[in-house]
Length: 427
Image 1: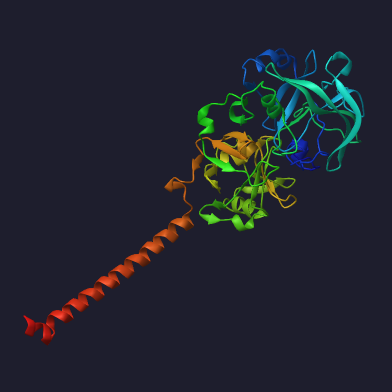
Image 2: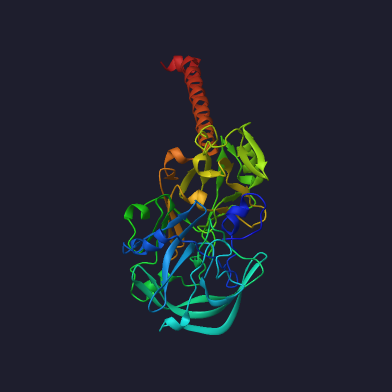
């Protein structure tokens, strides 16, 4: 997850739509807005032993309930595959939003209420671009659906910088980092090591607002899998990116694509953005730099089938991204949810990419699986890129010509032999 100031719709998306550089220093404090009905549904959110119901905040963020302390205190956090640590703000945080100045009141951690609280004086700075917060390292019991990880390492924020995070539309209490960093043990790894869980696997099903862990349906595990291209991030190698039969792989700033549940949008190259925008004369850039469809106020992105499908080729899987996923509704306009990735060292594939799939993260085997109608195995001949097909056919054509030439030569030799004087004398 990353956070960065923007003028157009990203003021609305805010901190959700940018990637967080994964390190022990970079974690983000955020708040939560939950109405009474949502608070009344806390038991429902924990109703299934290995399934957590996520709260979808206008397709900008997906937050889930986590309980901290003994007895448990409830917090709604983003389950973020783009950052490392679990953190919430503590009671008395300086400069933190403890009053509804932004339209919501966050939950805050109260150490004196927990018999298992262990907050040190060891301070850490949490930075996202120009936004800064400070926290204490500590240990606490962390609960998911009654499964407890004891003495789990986390951070308690005691001070925010001058900028406040969050908005009424996108609000939550903190972040639970689930990165692929080998130096950080996430809650599922610790639960497995303590014998509370059978596996450390977890999966996102954003289309159905679900988060799965431990007991994951086998069909999701049998889906096309791709190896991670980095040892500390959930990235895969983009071997090819095609739009309308054209190859745009070389336009990417990197071949690594981070599948980040803490990012709302998709970040690719300007070449990819231009290919989509140039595919239709209906695009404009009226929303302060955000590409939108002309004459589409109130259309809610319903008439977009004329836009191209983006094809992602990787080691083991082909993933298709249809326009229904990369176009989104904002202020009754249909806008392009793909932004330029040049500011990062790789491509970012956030919620807009993940919503069409069930993505399973397997840290032990350093791989991800992608389940859904737009994901298929690369071993299927239908998923082989066009240039490979053409190369194979060209090679077969050359072999056919060589065979025909060879046969013609043999026939010519045979005719010469049968009509020679020596052959006739022998007969």
